[in-house]
Each structure stands twice: as C-alpha cells, then as structure tokens.
Length: 154
Image (tube, rainbow, N blue to C red; front, side, top):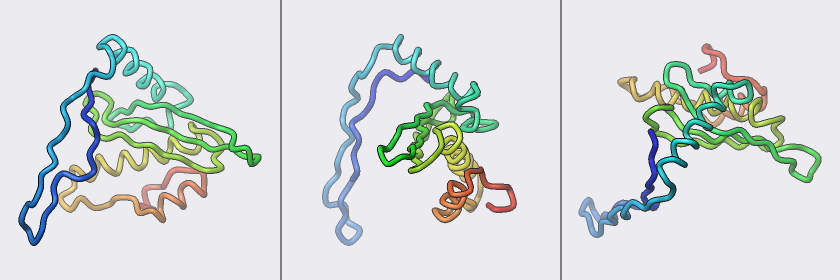
C-alpha cells in the first residue's frame, strides 16, 4: 500500500440546478504527508495490530484489515472505546472509525463492530443488489450486546 500523499478532503464535488451542473469543485492537489519509510513503518504497525491478540476482533477474513485500538477514561467513571482502521489491508479502499461510549476496550467493544461493518461493506461490493448492509439498529444492538452479529441476525 505505502501512500505518502493525501488529497485534501472535499464534501461537495459539484453543484447542480435542475440537472445542470452549475459549478464543479476540482479535487485538491496531492500533498506529501510523510516519507516512504515512515509510511511503510506505519503500515506494518497497523497490520500487526489486527494480526495480534488486541486487534484480532477487527480482522476481516478474506480481506485483511489494519488499524489501532484505543480506550480512554471518560471522567464519568467509565471508558470509551474505539477502533480506527482500513480495509482491505493490502489495497485499502475504506477507512472506518468506530467509537463506543462506555465500551470496555477498543479490542473488545469497537473492533468487532469495525469487523462487521467492514465485512458488510466489502460483501456489498460483490452483491448485485448491494444489499445486506447493517442498519444502525443492528449496529446498536451489537454494541449493546457486546458481541458481533450472528449470521442469522443480518
């Protein structure tokens, strides 16, 4: 993968009025954000997380994934958990961040949600209908239960 440049994000690609393009917003020029060596080191570190015990719940079978777990005390007596990563591991197309308020840890609470969302997105690319994606209600149930969805609940 090893990417050293990034394009500035844009929220709008064009403005239309009655199906006529009124204005186009061109993507910004790529900007170098790190050296090739740093990018390769980051890639290896992020892939090692999902290969190890802490992030194995974020591993997307057949596609691979890479990312980082996180847990922070909220100051309210509980923790917040997150997992931020990308899929597929070798030629990434999607970056996903999952935040679970009151989660036990990034590896236990957020990583399984990341895996399910990533797997559903990747599976939808190969579905003629693009269907089967997780609804917000199903993701909430999964987080509340602290477990990943079973195949029959999708």
